[in-house]
Length: 190
Image (cartoon, rainbow, N blue to C red; front, side):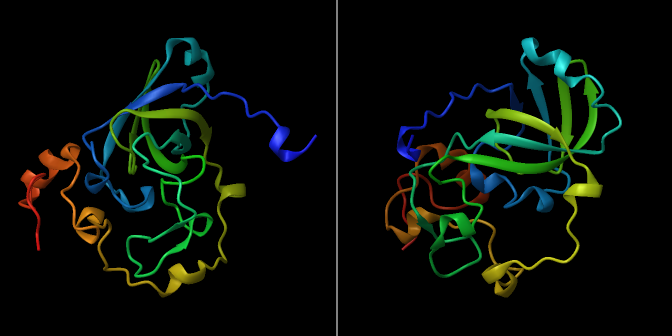
C-alpha cells in the first residue's frame, strides 16, 4: 500500500473552547506568550469520563483544529519575519492539515468544563484531544530554534495581511479593527 492509498481516519472534536478572542489578532502569537488569557473548554458529554484523574495537573496539551485557517500554502511569512519560510518550519495555522498544539495552564475542572489560561486559541476552536503536560519527558532544556533565534523579540505578533495585498480586510475583522482604531472593512490604509 502506498502513502497515497492510506486512508486518514475522520477526526471528531471532543469539545469546544470558548474565550474572548474571535479573530487571530486578538490572540497571542503562541500559548507561551498568552499570559493571562482565559477560556473554558466544554468537553462533550460522551467524553466526560475521560477527564477523570486530570485534577492535579498544572498544564495540559491541547490538540485542536485551526478552524479559521485559510488555504494550505507550503511557504508562509511568520509574524516577526520578513521572508517566507517552509510551513513545516513554522507554527502557522495555514498548513496541509490545520492542526494546532498548545500547552495551556489548567486552572480547574468543573465536571466536564476545563478552565484554562495562558492560551492562544480562538472562540469556538474545536478541540481534538487533551494530554497532560509531563515535565520529566516534555521539557527539553538545550534547544535551538533555527531562523527564529535571529528574529527580533519586539516585532509585531500579527501581520495585517490584507494591507500587503492592498485589499479590504475580511468583514469578520470589523469589530477588532474598530476597537483598535484601524481601518474598517471598507477602508484602506494607503
